[in-house]
Length: 425
Ligand code: NIG
Ligand code: FE
Image: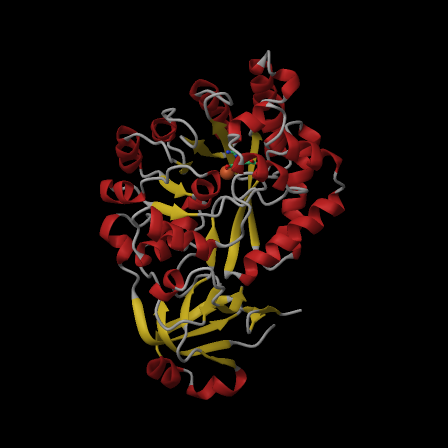
């Protein structure tokens, strides 16, 4: 059993206390529940006490010598960051397409000519478990160094059961072997394989009748996601696939209104999806329906940035009462990054979010988007001891000094895994 950890003297301790049952909306998103000169006592992988340093010093006087003390003077302490939408497990990279896009080709053009998701699918089919594991592990280390302690990871670069399973098995192994917790999503409906292009319904049936039951049986995923997009899966197909998943206990997520307006937000609300993601082209009606149904809007500003598209209207969504979360969308095509802090900067610069809202969006609301809000996303007694210490003395400096990695220390389940900005071996 590792020693208790005592974090003391934090310039700001962002607790985000008090909203485990439902995601934060509207003004709640700016209410970070900050303790100045804050302190936390971690033990047995759990947060045991949170408060002002003077109070905790008193409470734990008799045990201070047993603990590893981390002095956070001049530093910011936050819940470990949560990335609720990644395509973590992939092989290779697509910088050739990056060049093509810079010369004017569109993301969908490239995909329709056999590149894009199809190119990565080929690479993943060819890759061994070990290669996939090692390439993804590098990204996991990158996430950890940026202060992230939990990531969601989607399959979807297999498009046949054997390869989808390989991706999901690698995600499971990463979860077991790496400090970061990985929450898995099945996304067999990421693209229609080229040999099914003439009969997409046959592929939809394959997902529904074979892949979804197999995923559930092997307990390889908790969520089910569909790329509902003009030229990929229609809202009707998405509905069928997500409803089939629900029958097997897979909670619905949806890539909605990413490239074209397609009433994906409306569908997410109708299905009671846990989240609708992207939403660059979401309609106002769709946003209102999401707010009413409590669907978390997972926004991925890296994708708009990298695809040179208009950004999702986070301001409008928050004002309408949609609980908003932020994510990297980490993938080799539309957002090859592991930097959630950079997403926070983009959210402020391009989507009308405030620095405080951005913090909520990568902590407690992100935890809600993956149904983990009772365990992570805030610093509260009884929650997992997942904590990040940044080398800034005010939370807004995270977004203000952008393009810099401010992560100093990361604690995962009560263990220091990053120290002085470097991985602890
Ligand atoms: O979220 N939109 C679909 N899927 C990913 C991109 C995947 C890829 O290009 O490899 C996304 O943007
Ligand atoms: Fe995505």
